[in-house]
Image 1 (cartoon, rainbow, N blue to C red):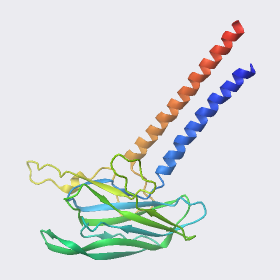
Image 2 (image 1 turned 180 degrees about the vertical axis):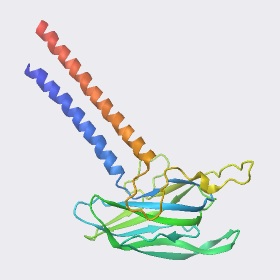
Image 3 (image 1 turned 180 degrees about the horizontal axis):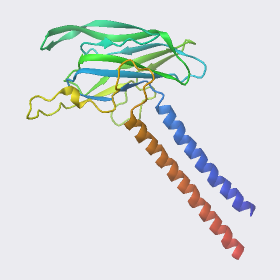
Image 4 (image 1 turned 135 degrees about the vertical axis):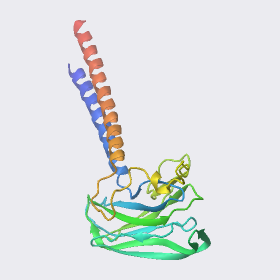
Length: 251
């Protein structure tokens, strides 16, 4: 009898630790600085990028956020939405290669945005909205490296970029994938902004907006499926152990 109880305890512990590991991994993944939406059409115009910054420290507040915009494939016409309690500073840089547009040649573009003056408390997050006039059409993705400064002086550098075939970087930089432009329809040229994913934030300047419903649902279903599978394994182990115990008693 004692052997059966020990075996059952082990099955239960394995299932519990495995489920806890799944939940911990999911929580860690959501703690990164991210950009939403995570994809746009190449050359998209008049769109919005939202940088979500969570505070993952237990005792320190986030007091400064810096986002660095690529200048080799610049984002044109950057505008920052006012954000309660925060002051935004946009730094422009002269481009090595000017960009020709329908409105003329662009020789400089935003290279850094810094938000200061506010605070993100532990366990909370803020959304920082950035409007743009036009995205580049000659690259497959845009990487926005970011620095997050805490009230205790700690700086977390979200600057790592995973290469093809590698696992996710430890401190991944926010990345926007640029997809092929929408096909031209019978009614004329298709709008590039119409290809914006439905997961894009619906309003600018919202610091308490919920995460993308699609992303949250998919993540929730994935976690639920993994936990259900683990519980199924635990139940199977229970049946096997119980069968062996019953067999031994019959002997």
